[in-house]
Image (cartoon, rainbow, N blue to C red; front, side):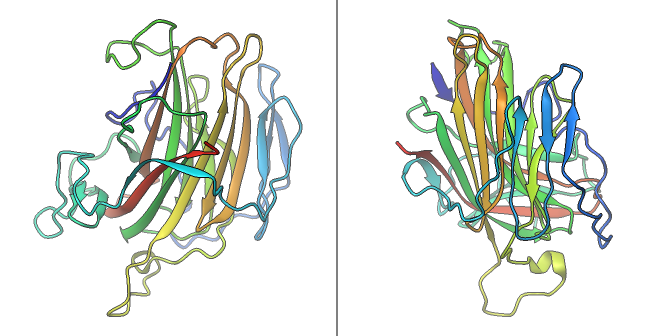
Length: 326
């Protein structure tokens, strides 16, 4: 069975955003671009990580086969079937709270007619990790196809350069015959893929989180061409009468279920403003022998404040979930 589920922030056994090295402080120069590096883990699996300069995008592969270059000209898929969508004209009921700019400017919640606000105030109760996630609702038909795409328009209302925002998709595997929607049911395996975009548009990163990774594992990254700068981040201000600035993010997750001795395989592709920014192939998305498991697919919106201890507000102006090639 394959289903989609909404619920509280991730309970994968790890912090929703994992532990990672502190980002460079605001205004710090970017480090030089490293040469392609090949690493080996203690289990003998080959991992390839590439980082390229401006104007190039790369497909990184995690597993055992060769590196494949991602075509710079690959557009987002057009053969789409809408499974869920909201423009927040009315409250979709994602959370119980309302965001009030005047009374509680740093309370996350629905901003009437505008979107879902995710906010953080360091003078208040600190979030337990460096970021937060919010599960999005499931479509009326809980069974989800293997190839999905999540899309959102995002506005940084208040923030800083190394704040990041994004979307993610998760596959959770439960024992055969179990009830995966029961809160007491324990999953056998999960894998989460996330697109994170820096608020200054300097970089987009694809990451992976599983029971075997220590927090988030970077799969691929790339520059973000034609990023529309946020006045709240670059200090430029917004001219009176102009529309608020937002950037569009898309994340495609194409999964192949495990089959006997063959592990599961997932291709993850990311776009910002319809420009390809990163892609990765995970040849070990689920262990061999997990065919027949109950599969739940989840999607989330997220922010990562890094080591920042200043207020932030990130507004998701709309949200779409599509089947690709249905």
